[in-house]
Length: 146
Length: 168
Image (tube, rainbow over all chains, first blue to last red; front, side, top):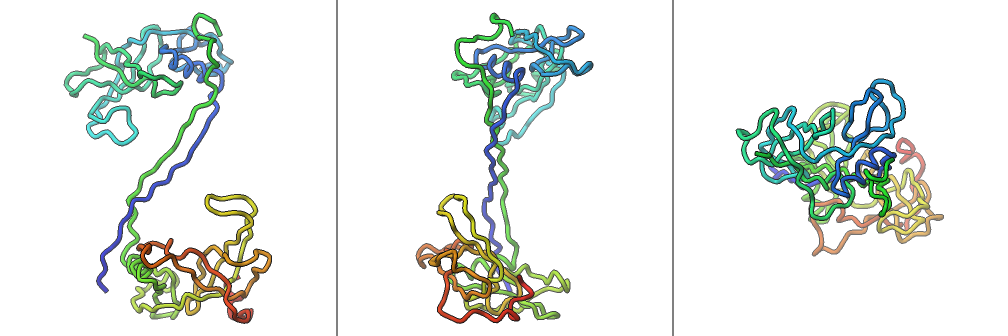
């Protein structure tokens, strides 16, 4: 019994609406305004993105702090084959970026052309979306600063 | 929340959309590909286990009970018996409630399949009810189970309970 084996695209998609809570909400609201918002922790460190509870003492956090949209790469890896839905369609770096004024780093795409151009300690600047709506996509990626 | 940090002029963000999507390339394998090609021709096919003689629809290429390959293929009539059903009262895309979905034992097979029941008052649906497949127009048929729009009742006496009791 010889048969041409069939194949077909099969996609599963869920819509999912989540409430942000006050701190992530402030972070998202900040992105819409072109700002990066963190929160001061119990020990004085500034966490970015803003978080609801202190990671050491678990107490409620509420002191929002705006940090710069420039920062430093603390570690990175190269994404040679970007997939659908990722921030850029051409190869880029996934990097942990510590924004100036922050004490923690967050994951951001860095559009730097080639893996040889990026290194730990590299200075970067945010590239913002033209139209911002209050999602993580408002912060398109980072660019290297010379 | 200090005013100089967050602009209060427009309402703050309180919810975000996080759609999740997985893209697969699905391949049904040899046995089910043959089944789907048959559907394209307007036939429902099954495969018989050489050991226990049970007929599987759709065929998987092997008998899950005996663990042997199933090669004998047969064409079924497209008629069957309702063995279990559910009446749904809430809307679903393209379906107006109340609507009935039923497990149907196709004549000549030893497994049930779930299909929509239409052309029938939901209150009339019962175990043992005899039904037949309603196909989409020939020109619109593809290698797809969607070729069968639904099942509808046929003018036959209900099946004897003994004939479907193992499938309820």
